[in-house]
Image (cartoon, rainbow, N blue to C red; front, side, top):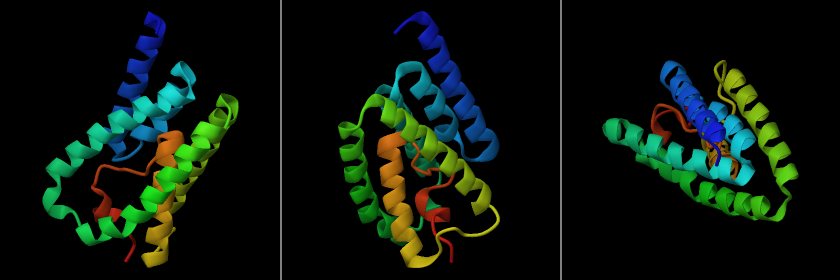
Length: 159
Protein backbone atom coordinates (compact mmCIF):
# COMPACT_ATOMS: atom_id res chain seq x y z
CA UNK A 1 0.00 0.00 0.00
CA UNK A 2 1.31 3.46 -0.86
CA UNK A 3 1.57 6.29 1.65
CA UNK A 4 -1.31 8.04 -0.10
CA UNK A 5 -3.51 4.97 0.32
CA UNK A 6 -2.58 4.70 3.99
CA UNK A 7 -3.53 8.34 4.54
CA UNK A 8 -6.83 7.85 2.70
CA UNK A 9 -7.60 4.67 4.67
CA UNK A 10 -6.92 6.49 7.96
CA UNK A 11 -9.10 9.40 6.84
CA UNK A 12 -11.93 7.03 5.88
CA UNK A 13 -11.77 5.28 9.24
CA UNK A 14 -11.64 8.59 11.11
CA UNK A 15 -14.62 9.96 9.15
CA UNK A 16 -16.60 6.78 9.73
CA UNK A 17 -15.76 6.83 13.45
CA UNK A 18 -16.76 10.51 13.71
CA UNK A 19 -20.06 9.76 11.97
CA UNK A 20 -20.67 6.84 14.32
CA UNK A 21 -19.91 8.98 17.37
CA UNK A 22 -22.08 11.90 16.28
CA UNK A 23 -25.12 10.01 14.94
CA UNK A 24 -24.95 6.62 16.65
CA UNK A 25 -24.55 4.80 13.35
CA UNK A 26 -22.77 5.18 10.07
CA UNK A 27 -19.28 3.79 10.56
CA UNK A 28 -19.81 1.09 7.95
CA UNK A 29 -21.84 3.31 5.65
CA UNK A 30 -19.06 5.88 5.51
CA UNK A 31 -15.86 3.88 5.99
CA UNK A 32 -16.74 0.92 3.74
CA UNK A 33 -17.40 3.13 0.72
CA UNK A 34 -14.06 4.89 0.96
CA UNK A 35 -12.09 1.77 1.88
CA UNK A 36 -13.50 -0.10 -1.13
CA UNK A 37 -12.57 2.77 -3.42
CA UNK A 38 -9.06 3.14 -1.99
CA UNK A 39 -7.91 -0.47 -1.53
CA UNK A 40 -10.42 -2.52 -3.51
CA UNK A 41 -13.63 -4.37 -2.72
CA UNK A 42 -12.30 -7.52 -1.02
CA UNK A 43 -9.65 -5.78 1.06
CA UNK A 44 -11.87 -2.78 1.84
CA UNK A 45 -14.77 -4.89 3.06
CA UNK A 46 -12.43 -7.15 5.07
CA UNK A 47 -10.74 -4.19 6.76
CA UNK A 48 -14.07 -2.51 7.53
CA UNK A 49 -15.47 -5.76 8.95
CA UNK A 50 -12.46 -6.16 11.25
CA UNK A 51 -12.82 -2.59 12.49
CA UNK A 52 -16.58 -2.95 12.89
CA UNK A 53 -16.08 -6.12 14.92
CA UNK A 54 -13.83 -4.19 17.31
CA UNK A 55 -16.43 -1.42 17.49
CA UNK A 56 -19.25 -3.89 18.18
CA UNK A 57 -17.25 -5.64 20.91
CA UNK A 58 -16.66 -2.29 22.56
CA UNK A 59 -20.36 -1.42 22.41
CA UNK A 60 -21.36 -4.82 23.79
CA UNK A 61 -18.87 -4.46 26.64
CA UNK A 62 -20.26 -1.06 27.60
CA UNK A 63 -23.97 -1.96 27.25
CA UNK A 64 -23.97 -5.59 28.39
CA UNK A 65 -26.90 -5.18 30.80
CA UNK A 66 -29.15 -3.63 28.13
CA UNK A 67 -28.84 -6.47 25.62
CA UNK A 68 -32.01 -8.45 24.97
CA UNK A 69 -30.44 -11.85 24.32
CA UNK A 70 -33.65 -13.46 23.14
CA UNK A 71 -33.89 -10.96 20.29
CA UNK A 72 -30.23 -11.44 19.45
CA UNK A 73 -30.68 -15.21 19.19
CA UNK A 74 -33.75 -14.76 16.96
CA UNK A 75 -31.55 -13.05 14.36
CA UNK A 76 -28.43 -15.18 14.81
CA UNK A 77 -29.29 -18.24 12.66
CA UNK A 78 -30.61 -16.18 9.73
CA UNK A 79 -27.46 -14.04 9.97
CA UNK A 80 -25.29 -17.14 9.63
CA UNK A 81 -27.25 -18.16 6.52
CA UNK A 82 -26.80 -14.64 5.12
CA UNK A 83 -23.06 -14.76 5.80
CA UNK A 84 -22.76 -18.04 3.92
CA UNK A 85 -24.73 -16.73 0.93
CA UNK A 86 -22.78 -13.45 0.93
CA UNK A 87 -19.42 -15.25 1.04
CA UNK A 88 -20.46 -17.47 -1.84
CA UNK A 89 -21.54 -14.47 -3.88
CA UNK A 90 -18.47 -12.38 -3.04
CA UNK A 91 -16.13 -15.19 -4.08
CA UNK A 92 -17.93 -15.97 -7.32
CA UNK A 93 -18.37 -12.53 -8.92
CA UNK A 94 -15.84 -10.22 -10.52
CA UNK A 95 -14.33 -7.29 -8.62
CA UNK A 96 -16.27 -4.85 -10.82
CA UNK A 97 -19.57 -6.60 -10.12
CA UNK A 98 -18.76 -6.71 -6.40
CA UNK A 99 -17.91 -3.01 -6.43
CA UNK A 100 -21.24 -2.20 -8.11
CA UNK A 101 -23.00 -4.42 -5.60
CA UNK A 102 -21.32 -2.69 -2.65
CA UNK A 103 -22.43 0.68 -4.00
CA UNK A 104 -26.00 -0.49 -4.54
CA UNK A 105 -26.22 -2.07 -1.10
CA UNK A 106 -24.79 1.12 0.42
CA UNK A 107 -27.45 3.28 -1.22
CA UNK A 108 -30.18 0.84 -0.13
CA UNK A 109 -28.82 0.87 3.44
CA UNK A 110 -28.85 4.68 3.57
CA UNK A 111 -32.45 4.71 2.33
CA UNK A 112 -33.41 2.09 4.92
CA UNK A 113 -31.89 4.21 7.68
CA UNK A 114 -33.77 7.29 6.47
CA UNK A 115 -37.10 5.42 6.18
CA UNK A 116 -36.53 3.42 9.36
CA UNK A 117 -36.39 6.55 11.49
CA UNK A 118 -40.08 7.17 10.78
CA UNK A 119 -41.39 3.63 11.22
CA UNK A 120 -40.28 0.05 11.71
CA UNK A 121 -39.36 -1.43 8.33
CA UNK A 122 -39.20 -5.06 9.46
CA UNK A 123 -41.51 -5.52 12.46
CA UNK A 124 -42.07 -8.70 14.45
CA UNK A 125 -40.58 -12.16 14.10
CA UNK A 126 -40.65 -12.31 10.27
CA UNK A 127 -38.90 -8.94 10.18
CA UNK A 128 -36.27 -10.15 12.65
CA UNK A 129 -35.53 -13.20 10.51
CA UNK A 130 -35.24 -11.08 7.35
CA UNK A 131 -33.13 -8.46 9.15
CA UNK A 132 -30.77 -11.14 10.46
CA UNK A 133 -30.28 -12.67 7.00
CA UNK A 134 -29.80 -9.25 5.38
CA UNK A 135 -27.34 -8.22 8.06
CA UNK A 136 -25.21 -11.34 7.53
CA UNK A 137 -25.34 -10.97 3.75
CA UNK A 138 -24.56 -7.25 3.78
CA UNK A 139 -21.71 -7.66 6.28
CA UNK A 140 -20.03 -10.26 4.09
CA UNK A 141 -20.51 -8.58 0.73
CA UNK A 142 -20.34 -4.88 1.55
CA UNK A 143 -19.24 -4.48 5.15
CA UNK A 144 -22.66 -3.05 6.04
CA UNK A 145 -24.14 -5.18 8.76
CA UNK A 146 -26.54 -2.71 10.36
CA UNK A 147 -24.64 -2.42 13.60
CA UNK A 148 -25.22 0.78 15.47
CA UNK A 149 -24.15 2.35 18.71
CA UNK A 150 -26.48 0.08 20.69
CA UNK A 151 -26.12 -3.69 20.89
CA UNK A 152 -28.12 -5.82 18.49
CA UNK A 153 -30.97 -6.76 20.78
CA UNK A 154 -31.60 -3.24 22.02
CA UNK A 155 -33.14 -1.83 18.87
CA UNK A 156 -33.00 -4.56 16.27
CA UNK A 157 -36.65 -5.55 16.54
CA UNK A 158 -39.72 -3.38 16.55
CA UNK A 159 -42.31 -4.35 19.17
